[in-house]
Amino acid sequence: MSAATWALELKDLRKSFGKTDIIRGVDLQVAAGERIGIIGPNGAGKSTLFNLISGRLEPSSGKVLLNGKRIDGKKPFEINRMGLSRSFQITNIFPRLSVFENLRCAVLWSLGYRYTFLRFLSKLDDVNQRAEELLEMIQLGRKRDVLATNLTYAEQRALEIGVTIAGGANVILLDEPTAGMSRGETARFIELIKEVTVGKTLLTVEHDMGVVFGLADKIAVVVYGEVIAFDVPQQVRADQKVQEAYLGSAVAAQQEGGH
Image (cartoon, rainbow, N blue to C red):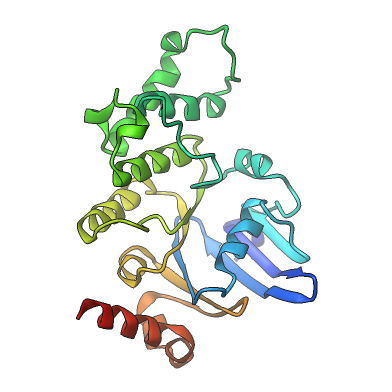
């Protein structure tokens, strides 16, 4: 498969802080439309990896390619405009704006408009139409005119997903999207993520194994800054290295927590 075919490709990616190696030669190829779960113990380097991909950090060496084009070294907003969006990279939702107004602000740039107070947003039919579509996609139509600050936590996360996909990015990064949700909220949110990312490439960092195995086509296991396994969920679950390094202890901890 040629480099241009990969939606996202990491080549010998490394990041050091002083003499401490955090990411140690990560190679990863993600095909268009794949949903990838990234798991690993605390301190494994998962967040650093996301920061390198989204431009919040520059790699010490190696390459990051988005649809065959190098993005390492570029600023986050430049990467975003090239088609990659991260859930909390687009600053948190505006609490004093309504759900619809949040979505409309997120849509403006992707449709070629620049922020200006000289235009009446209500007259921008294409912006309003796209915002209405997103409103239905994230299932917040009944909360259209509610201020974002008055939404439940799960609803705020759904709005954040809407803001993230508003720009039309084809590669989406979500960092622990279900953190803090109840089991019922988590189950509904997984289905929402599946629906709104149809046809898009998704990478998500997640500690909840139920979320990972229910959402991901493939799972990358990161331990001490290295990917020790990258395969379909069934193979990762059965991998002895993964069980020894991470998965077995994580599952055991969840089971203990359930008693």
